[in-house]
Length: 246
Image (cartoon, rainbow, N blue to C red):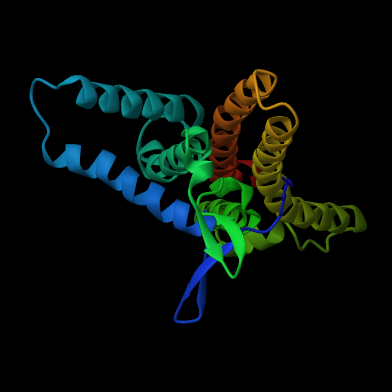
């Protein structure tokens, strides 16, 4: 028996030349699951909610109040809530789905090679990078809408003196490092947890891997929360840029 660890996801099949990987397939499954969980109950709301509706209302209300505590109440909170909440729920469910029992046994034979059908979505850097680019792009759009395009560019291009020019360049580099820091934090922790869990299960199949699985479970929750909160904080900072520039 050998242990195969690959940084890149496995390609399961192709549709019109487009490769479908196990992480992409899993992301479609989870997206459909989340749509069913949140959209269907929303169409059948009851004045006296059941346990499931009460849980969803408590989750959404608690998340909205948390966002208000950071970005402030009112229009800003209402606008940013859908993005931040969606990022958090998707990342959280994608991370926790790894711990569904039996999914490792679901495999296909692809050209004589046994390939797992399911894999942790956030262990695919391409998926995490897309989420990060969406977050950073929204931050830039908020900054431009708040300060205006010329003041926004003035943060990075300032020829008043050498110091201001240098600080502008550092500010520009800082915007690009957000992409690296956000994406590698989530991807690195989830991929490392997946590899560590696989190694422990391979070397010590019974009992010994349990502490590492609990640690991975904690990491899955924390990293989803951190990614969403950092996105929220960056948006909050961008929405206050006009005040800082003045």
